[in-house]
Length: 450
Image (tube, rainbow, N blue to C red; front, side):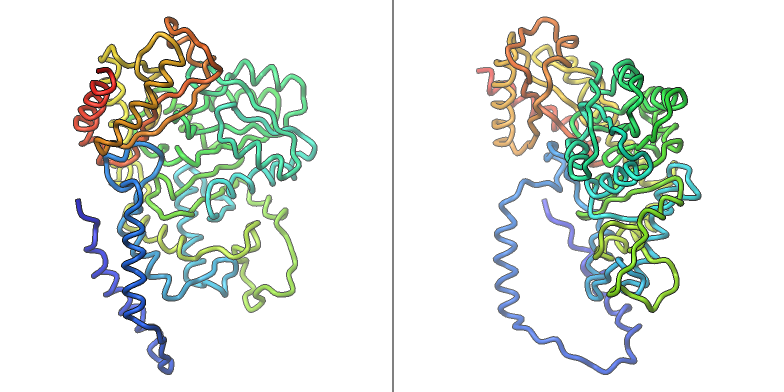
């Protein structure tokens, strides 16, 4: 296995091209000890070997995916300028690139009119969405499923907003009956629909939530930090397809290009359907840039300094791989879903494993079969450790026992949670590697069962 290096020569050509744009300036020298730099960088390279091989298909654990070579090269290219997208004057080209790239993301959801910008990640993007929710519905409660990302409750605490978790159903999605019972109290201002939980990849039943919005009235935020790009693919199940088909009807959306969008960390995005919410961001600063009369991104963002490099990388990647339903990007993403369905089918056929429900996106949850939840947890941990010795890297996931009793009626549950195995198959190459991944899982299971 070799790390991709061909893009380095292309990057060198691009640096030389960019340099021509500043050829009229007097020369200025940048002095540094090249030999010392070489030595330190080699030390860094050695230290970086102490990592799991996140870039390789046999890393099938957490949601870690290498950036596209285009994203890496464009990000590095911009570092010779190091733009700051807080203000137009701090990153003129990169600010325009951000606006164009964000508009393409909004168009995926059917929005031609919107307000949005990039953020340092999904946490900050969701914070801004809930901050606006608090402004629109002051004093009202924020609710999300108990399988939503934990940051929603934490963000609400930071913003001094009241938060409550809604129980999930046996497929790890928000329970519509439980949600309606909570809505009857009349104090809910915002419902967060998770479009791909980070635990299981479950997609909340958005059409049903929209019907409840018509009945009770509330602001609806879609946290699609993980699953948002799946709006482009055509091989999802019926319920997930209907949910993504409805996503353009929500009030705000979060999506993370640094997950399925092939970008380096950190690159998140928040989108608002109604541009008038930009009024909540209004501020006056005596030390920001005043040489531009045009609205700059710092006026619609809670973050100040932001890496223009993220916008450059995203713009370049989307130029190379357009965000269209019939394009190369969408086809590659559909391969991730295909890989998850294939692995799930193999686990279903092997009586030594327990599964829960067919994956809605590209995350598969499973566990070794045993009589008690304690034994399942122990065997899951053993399989996790043993698989790593075979260079197959999975993840452990603590799953609520109450959501498993329906799927595993013969198991005696001793604890509130069960340690399961989680495989996030978010690399397109996983589709071609499932036979090998399955063979390694099977060999690992044989080893721990001896």
